[in-house]
Image (cartoon, rainbow, N blue to C red; front, side, top):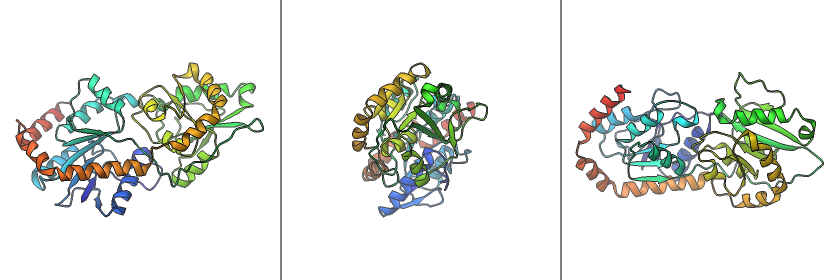
Length: 347
């Protein structure tokens, strides 16, 4: 198969989406398939759109480029949209509608969490009836499990990491912990490490901030800590907490977005700044229980990539049926594309 992935892969720390692109492209190539990151080839079998907004620096092609390709170059390509985004996670506007609009020309949709499916349903947004849920996964050969132990002879190290400096990544909670560290009774027991880009307008007193890291360097930093925390609001999935969990760190996770879907059973849930201290205390008391459970944590890049390859193979096997459904569409492809452009410029 020849698969086009609509991403510009970065060789530096650049967020979880970039890691996904690296994992999937490497896996597909190692499995004997061809991968490209543009629509220059005339015989692409699978077109995977990871974001319809082609103006973004991380996106190599979006919905408009795909429409031009299918209508003018290769009408037999199977079109898949991966959705790992929403307005709710960063307080943006119109992203959900753009995702839905771009989805109108897709043959299949992959969501990274059930939470996203339910979110769009509640908003009355229309997506393909044919969809899959494929969870994110990180590299288990880099983020390797270690049997963690805590004791009274040293401080317990909390850690989180985010590429984005957006405050909705959990800074209401992280700032609360920063203030808690002003108290000697808390700071004598705990440290808090932040790896990544912090908001420039937040004054940090006690959090130990590290530069953005990726791969082995990131895994080394994580393994030096004891407890992972994600306070991200409306997180569609993320990769950060997965990397922490694979390193054997029990998770403090916010009851928001897809975090419970990924983290339940592997740590302690909390709601926000008001109950974070109680959650930390509870996790410390049951620490060994969660460390042992993390031996069975399954969200790896191997599982994720195998699921994508299985999906691609199944869709190619049913290509004739999929193409026939396109033709039977009551608007027809050309009319559908025209409607897409009309609605796009209305936004």
